[in-house]
Image (cartoon, rainbow, N blue to C red; front, side, top):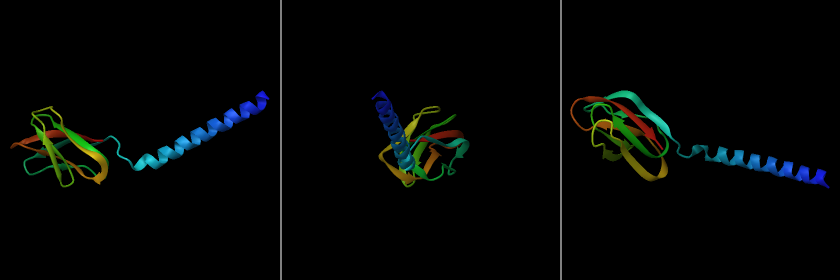
Length: 115
């Protein structure tokens, strides 16, 4: 009797692992954390653009100046100063292009991340 129980437990575990793997493969197109513009210089009229991807928001900061963050045609907030993070949360996943722009004259090294 315990031999049959062991087989059923093993079969159940195998099915659970297969279902989990299948579920993860289906969710691969959903938004996930992904850096963009890491260490690139943004300057007046020279924003930095990341590659198009599935995302539900983006955040960014500049080393020496404040920056603004956006996705495709949506302009988001600006940070309050150097090293401060500006975050744009869309509330749902889309295919979009994240970007970072400086909101003062000059330039700064910028870093962004999508989620």
